[in-house]
Length: 270
Image 1 (cartoon, rainbow, N blue to C red):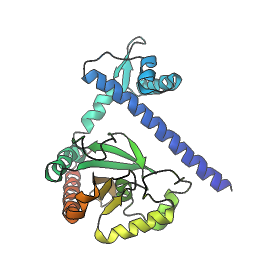
Image 2: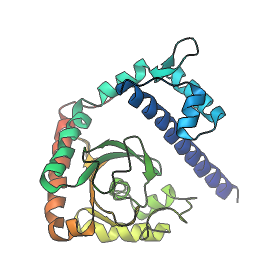
Image 3: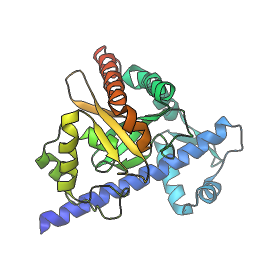
């Protein structure tokens, strides 16, 4: 019983952290977007109103972001991007993460599909980069957003090397009910069954697992030591994959291999 309570508390904490991360990123995104567009900067009450968030919550999150130097403000004035934000932005343009930008755009040009690069943090998948075609399916998710590991193509690609026992340990305490799309897994055995279906063909095909009408092909990206470090995925309707599924999967594997080679040359983010 004590173990079960600990597991529930651990997952509740992870969900809370995910919520805080998501809200913090929304704040940063709004502030940076207004700076880029030359619009007036905002204080706590204005941010809360724009984002429909509790003012006390915004106050706490902006204080934490300022302590991390991701945001800054002068004499309790409006917020703007801080030095750590720009350092982070610069780091995303070197090594394999920087190379990923051009790789994602290749899928736009060749297949007209939305492409993503993601990494895993526990049971959460964090989107690092996304392609530029905002009109394509799945475009509502923006960089920095968090999605579940068990019901997304990217998430399941990140679990590619996990044994069933490791998947079970990772997902202990997860509440599957009400999460994901109409064909999402609702238990650990269902997640493992989907993985076993996909492994023989060498890539993940997630059909409406996270969003109604959206299909996803995904492959793992490995570091020079062969460990899965990221997932490369494309999204579209079923028709896009029914005809060119193997071709698209081959292109994903090729792109993932190119990113691995960039990583072996010493590039990357520390």
